[in-house]
Image (cartoon, rainbow, N blue to C red; front, side):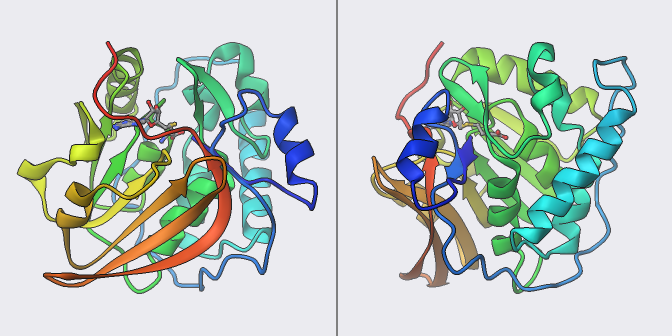
Length: 267
Ligand code: SAH
């Protein structure tokens, strides 16, 4: 989960959020630098289940409006924006919250976690696609599975790890039922990465640690990129590029607010 916090009084805005850790952006600075590049066409069709839901056809309108907002907030990568337009975000939250699924924020998904703010998802994925679209990408923090579903429409192979068993138990069949066969889920501690599937062209971390776990840096392919929030009360998105076997270069991006990255698993 992640959100973006707007305006100068980020604190006041933050206090309004429930839960207070919520995968959002903290302040609007110079704006994201994601440059325009037309992505490949979606590699996975999100043939999402046609089961009835609260929103019905209005969701198409709301979703397109959400995508336009994200575009206005500086994300220009067409492949990522198309993926955002494709995935039914309201099916990744509790039906009672479905009417709020296309608002610009994080929403609770249970177990103290949240679904990430659409802008944060788009910002992170667009940043990974700046030079070229990575093929094999690892996500740490599956949560409800929303970001993994968006990723499945941008990248050829998606691997995702969740440490909270009940969230994993919901996300895995949800992604399968959405027909996203290029997403592979694992229950476990994502701080350890997924060594048997490494190296990854890119890694996206959806929870904030005090530092980026070395195992993840080691599982990045040379030339690969990792994006992760870092910090405790004050957090920033960090982009790390692996330049060589022994050299990683880091760049700091926007201030954000994510739920904590925790070691071990929760059953
Ligand atoms: N990607 C999700 C965001 C979920 S919130 C979305 O689409 O909205 C972040 C998630 O990271 C939570 O579900 C939390 O349980 C998980 N998490 C935290 N530490 C983790 C770890 N070490 N390994 C795997 N998942 C972790």
